[in-house]
Length: 169
Image (cartoon, rainbow, N blue to C red; front, side):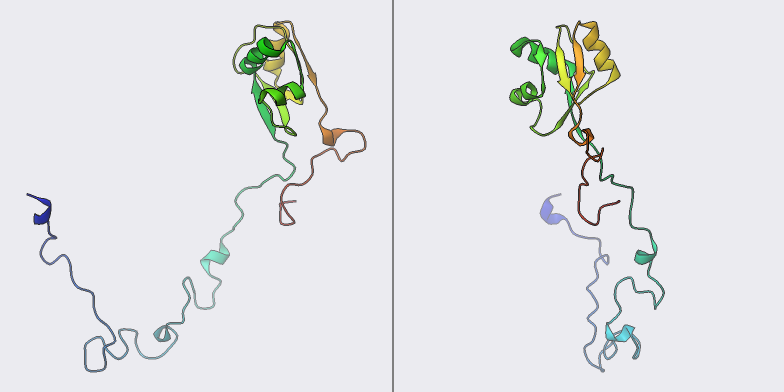
């Protein structure tokens, strides 16, 4: 059998019905829509339920909640700190992280405990997990937490709203 021998089973493909070909022909005049009325005149919108509130309006729309005050941290793992300490030395602050490409300028850094650290490192970051702090201190280093800019004296204590006037508040 070859591709040009393929054909649908006899009787499986039927030609479409040609409607509205005058009063003399079958399927003419009203073309199967009945006589008069809204549905005969092709004016019913999709989902229309005859004056009842349609299903698409009855179901709740908002799924979940986006916190407009979310604080996002850029994760920096122990193995990355270990590699950086071999290049630049034991004191690692936010500027060093930005210059090395581990942190984007203006982002908040959080130290996480993936990997191992063997060198003594003094790290300045916005946050750190408890297991990361324990690993750094076990290697003889220290972690200094930098205060977040929105938590400083005289500030609101939370970041500015992200989004627009329609954000969840």
